[in-house]
Image (cartoon, rainbow, N blue to C red):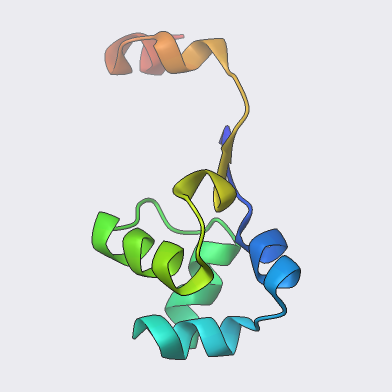
Length: 81
């Protein structure tokens, strides 16, 4: 998957633990851990906004994208190829 979660770097840069962030934004440590590991298929904008507010950052500090040409294919084309 070309979208990478870079939350750990943001946490480290601010000296905040995942446990503390989870408490601040009102999610379980398990939910935050799944996001940090990239094992979730989506995240609500409201959750992303709370993370950004708690860390005083923009979404681009929490996520990164690695270009993949197949991302431009229509979903049915990707399944065929």
